[in-house]
Amino acid sequence: MDFEQADALNQAIRLLSLRHRARAAALLAPLGLHPGQEALLLELARTGPMIQAQLSEALGCEPPSVTLMTRKLEATGHIRRTPAPSDKRASIVELTDSGKALADQVKQLWCALAEETVTGLPAGTVEVLPGILNTLTGNVDTRRPRHPHGRRHGLVAES
Amino acid sequence: MDFEQADALNQAIRLLSLRHRARAAALLAPLGLHPGQEALLLELARTGPMIQAQLSEALGCEPPSVTLMTRKLEATGHIRRTPAPSDKRASIVELTDSGKALADQVKQLWCALAEETVTGLPAGTVEVLPGILNTLTGNVDTRRPRHPHGRRHGLVAES
DNA sequence: ACAAATTAGTTATGCGCATAACATTATTCG
DNA sequence: CGAATAATGTTATGCGCATAACTAATTTGT
Image (cartoon, rainbow over all chains, first blue to last red; front, side):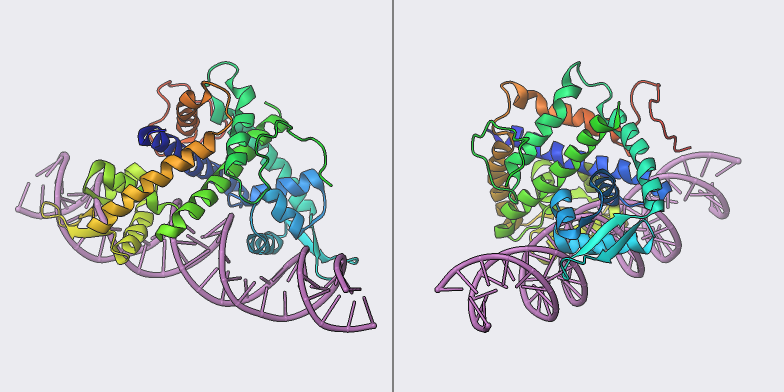
């Protein structure tokens, strides 16, 4: 691949990251949220109470980031952290009532943002887009074991 | 669009941002660069000496970000900032020799990263991918001129 | 059983990015 | 002209994200 093509691609990804995040920030600001925090709330809404290590895995960011994010969301009263009885190292994170309400609002915004994002795309593209993006992500994902040519989009839980 | 679809899309964009940036960081680290800085070097290599305001526009980030990034790249000796003779407010930014050499190395990495990123994509997808991503970016870009259509599809108006 | 290795979480630090408030210089216009 | 306005850049501050170094708790292996 020549540099022109490569640069167009990398630049496009970088710009999409910046603008999509900026747009998310603008939408989330009225709710008192910063971009990144919504993902944590949505994950808790989807999966229920969980350990920070699981959050780190689900969100795709490192434990220290989770520590700081949960601390701030706890300070604003949207989540609660309680020590896990079965493991004295771990702390269980869960949504408070205000956190649940906020997550519902985020869901609304999230739909609006997605629709805004894909406006004007060629027919049929919207359906395959998430798959394409996930393929790209998988290709550069260093934290999760690489499946060389594995065609299996495993819906199976890994042991 | 229902929440499942919207979430899949937004989440996919967020994760791609994180992982692509992380992969870029891993590739750039041996060169002593942090992700984001490579874009500045490449822009200077592409366009030649320019004002910080132009860099801000080209990179799609705000002037204070440019101030800090240029300061750090100047400290590491890769760029040079000289006062503009025609405009006492502005400062001209340009690559030093070491900066030019570094930019060339970045170009190599950038090609490798792009190829790695698009591995395994359906035939024909690679060619249209940058265009798709740019469409998405344009749809959520608040700093650029609004969509050519007068029609505003956004659900949240920013007065 | 107990030392070694792993795992959960935190603290410290640094970068890129943002907004807000500000100083300085250019430009526009009454 | 001179005053209002716009543009360039900086400082201060804050968030998300990262890595490195650390503590404390749990699991493993012999």
